[in-house]
Image 1: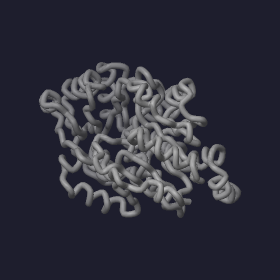
Image 2: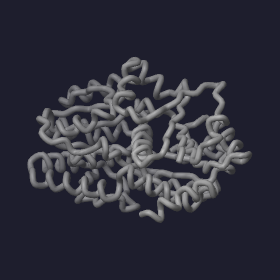
Image 3: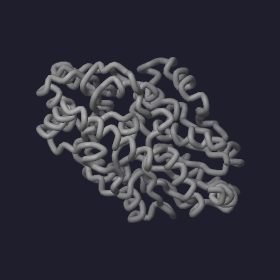
Image 4: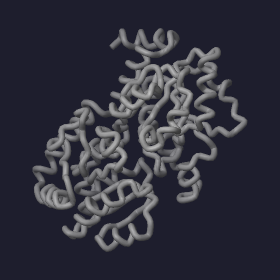
Length: 376
């Protein structure tokens, strides 16, 4: 089948975590013999910032790292209808321009035989509700929401005809344990600063414990203001800026522990939704300690797959425990990896996508998926 993904960017993951998941899903589709094509706007914020930060070499790096992936850049004159006419499934991300969201919907309502899907992986349904409410989703066959609480928001508001929970996951072709790397630090945290949504939490769970325990470590990510960089330096942590997602498994392998610090909108308004970094870290087999969030959907086994720390004092204690107890660290590594491989890979998500398409897709798509289902 032919899948088309409208994304903010496939090429750039600069402050754009959805690119990680989309790459993994597309790679899985291609590996199964399907065609997967991404479209991204020429003036996309993430792509523009990546080019400003890293230059054109970052785009070339993407092409070397993911040779099986294809992304087309579109502008104001792009003929979307021509591209869509032979598509089987079209997935439109919620960062897509609302006028284009409506235009693609009209193409589906007209002569389109493709299954049209809206994909939401952000907190704007809560933090910017009017913008989502204005999206014209009546012609969309299916909405994919990356958490059950977000799905309930869509159902309550009447956005979309069929709404399915579709969590992000790890691309296990890329994210895997790497043996034999020499450890260069105790702690690594990979995360962006991001609009003051976790400023206090970064201070409490990362900077404070690192300074208290005199840890060596590395912080990677973007949009850190000067005062944050000063605080990291005083805590003894090295700041490395943006990191290509392809390099993350090796970075994890060179450190002994990592952490998850969720953004406040997810903790307070959309509980149960971890960021993709949790899936990726566990897939790499590095022990993880998390600041509080409510795993209300039972995605993981807290205390077995990773540890929770309710405040900075607990984070310090848990970091000390993991770093001093090799048996505990090994147990967390093995358990987290087991859960990812059993439930949370991009291969699992493609299976879930196919299940949703069989239930809510067009007759054209259902006919093509039926033989695949029968063969399993």
